Length: 442
Image: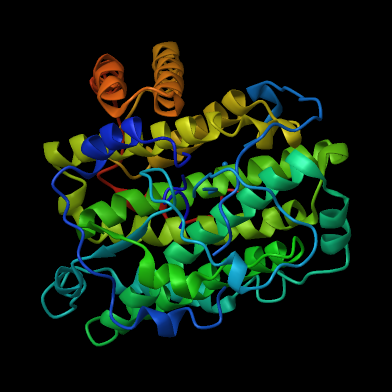
């Protein structure tokens, strides 16, 4: 589950509160699922890392060079020691902000009703059974095999580039593990109601655990490890109603696909920026994200009430905006990472947004007009406002003065968010879903 969005630092307080009002308004936060420690016994929290700039030059490119895209958690200033520290010393709590990878829970009773074959006679079980066979094939069973290149590449990284890359691994691992927890619990809870759907969720949790474990192994190259068992107990869980889980997770998986495949293709064409071998695995890895997205597309089609009225159109636009804005603000705080692998952050993000939006238009009843130049202008203004909010937060002013300075900035950010949401949307989706059966995008 990406982005999970996928998808800013611990100093990002005021704008995080603002967007949290926009995204998570009136959503309660219940306790985590039962016995989460059993799900994470073998998983490993790393000290949060700051995001200093790489020293390497940046290679920019235009959208035309793309033929056809989760990264995410916290940032806190510290250094990465080369000698192997004690495991105990590395268990530090991640500071929570809106844009760190979130852990999710939902109304499992409602989920059971939605996929009860006795209550919902119109469920297309044949489509779910076909998807189940696809997941059982497990194309990537032997894909995530490490070699000596990993440790050698990690040992060559020094200073700022080492720090920022560790943060990338930590954020990505946390995001993948977030998906594992949610899918694992859904697989357990739906086992009696709909065994086919339950097994698909369980197999998706297998994929997410595999991804998280692979990323955590990468951290071991830097003499660090994520204590995800501790995270499972300590982290707050965000509650989403089932239909919101469907919208958000579909977008999360598809945006993960476009991010991974874009990075893979760029580094294949520009091997001089291949600083760590994990990127070589992205071609196959992204197909897991794509299959997960196809499954959520099937879940949405099985519940047409989530797609066929005016409320569905409003929610579709809402979640598109939430995911796109969060990714853009997040990545623009970490331009050093993208510059380090030869990417222009804003061009990369806009390409990902364009492609994700086109894919999403196959199933969502309405999407944003992201290719309107005004949409990017609004995103850039949000970045500028966020930078000012960060500067206020880092200033030496007393709290009262900081809060007074934030008021006009928060108002400006709210104004940009609303203006982006109210831009004329693109009517999309299809009454006849047959032409949009799950298929590989790459």
